[in-house]
Length: 141
Image 1 (tube, rainbow, N blue to C red):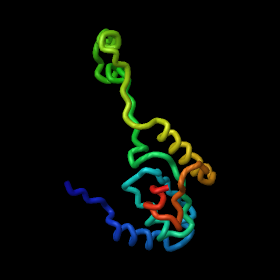
Image 2 (tube, rainbow, N blue to C red):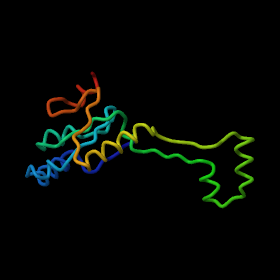
Image 3 (tube, rainbow, N blue to C red):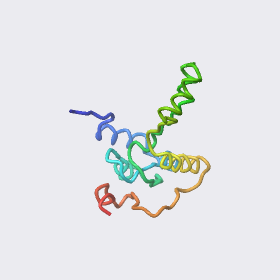
Image 4 (cartoon, rainbow, N blue to C red):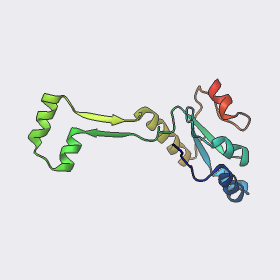
């Protein structure tokens, strides 16, 4: 199974070099890096652009994805008989289902809000991605 990503690493490098030729753009930029993201290309950005800040967060590439559906949401959307909801809750035991990690998502949201409010990246006890570390070194710690 072949998967192509856009932009390619070469295209990304060209965009970074053209859009971040001044430190003004870089100073307005923060990378939100998940410590277990195997698809992350942040190191390329850090190596190409001076002065970006980095928020190192726990999680994976899918950490920003969180979906929670309760039975009430499903019934309300389908406009089904409310008695069906009661039956499913009592007989089947289903009340809600979730995909993703709500705690990781909440950490990301807090970090983004902090960035918008002008706060520096939070300091947490985990390996940090910096201009002097590579992704492989960070993951081995």
